[in-house]
Length: 192
Image 1 (cartoon, helix red, strand yellow):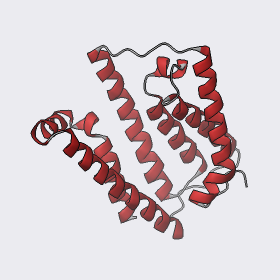
Image 2 (cartoon, rainbow, N blue to C red):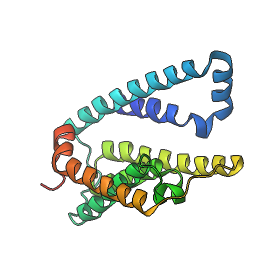
Image 3 (tube, rainbow, N blue to C red):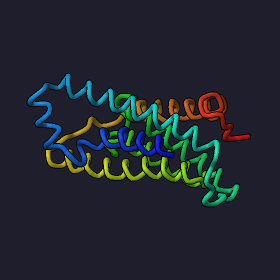
Image 4 (tube, helix red, strand yellow):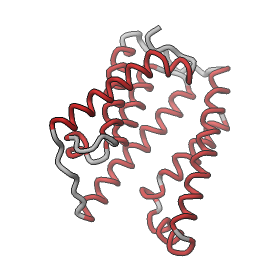
């Protein structure tokens, strides 16, 4: 469990720099340059991610069960992960109305993903992993919206074609991952 916790601290910590330590981040960039910041960010992110994967895998070998979620929550989790994939697509598909309205759909995708997995998993490692990402996403979304308001950031209006493409790409990615990718990467088949 220690590796999982250290990984979460590294990964979510560096991803929280704009939320918790923007002045320090700006000083670092001013003194050492944007490339140095990006290098540090990448290094800590990769190290944190590796520790999360390894630590979570270790924790799954001897799970500490906090509760057993009802089977019906898997349906809710499936719908939330579908939403997460559509929101993730909205971060990348140009001129979609979802990004035009929400501004930071990737962070909202993390929120939906985390809630889905908290609903369908009841082990301590699950609560630490998905709960940590949920807390980070909530704080990050709020901070990003505040930055947008303070700087007057505007987002291009969406088009029906862009929005439709976003939904279709998200749904296709969700179906492919749910049917094949989740079992291959995580070792769990969401639909049995």
